Length: 200
Length: 140
Image (cartoon, rainbow over the protein chains, first blue to last red):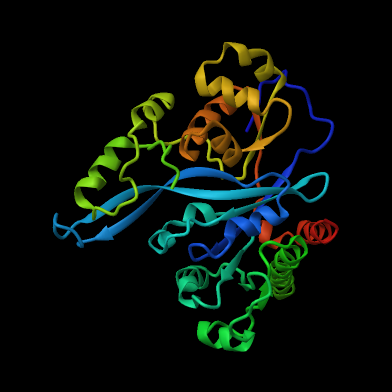
């Protein structure tokens, strides 16, 4: 992108934005999770997301393009002098699960928050990230210390790849949220290192 | 959902309402989409692609010209005058959909009133950046 030729040359490099996605069922604590680590109170934005459905409505055997406006909460963390980490919560409703492409574009990975009493609420997110090869960790939100199932039971119920970390977190606690984000970044880094050594 | 939602493409919203189940989320939203569409001068696609997290800052030229910009053009330049803000933050703070910010900001970029800081390409393979990011988060 060229700017006007008389625009001043910046003496220092600008900010480097990076993004992760916080997914999970409605009411699982995504916005709380974002707010626990964000420098700013979580903001809400609206985006139009497009989906395609085939032959399921009255107009017959045609592909229908549907645009829905969905709300997303997000936060921002200044990680160092340049890196700015954005955390985007996915829209909570299941039926938006197939509209996340725009949101996930360029994201490092995802945290899938799980309420162990409503494990099935996380299935759309797991399906989505698995099918697209997006790195993710599963974090069971303890809601103030209460765990209703063991980690192994949850892992089995979710039937996810053994390589995917399943951890507990507390969406209200800054250090727990930090550890959860770090476990995701660890997965991302290991993938990057594996690809690099594979390329050599 | 926030009742203050602004539809980006009102004709699509109406089309959906006709063919979708009644629980579709657009229900009850004021259709202020005409205005959103007017802001973007009728275009739904931007000349430059901006991600949700792409950050924007006013250039010196933009700062000088901010007062002469109308509506969202001026708001965007003024908001990201003192510090770079992401497309998503501009959208949230101006209460307009991300798609509108994308289109308007792309124009401002092309005209040299804003500069952009894009996410790193292939960031998932950037071991140096990832290492820095991890160290930074650990130190928070």
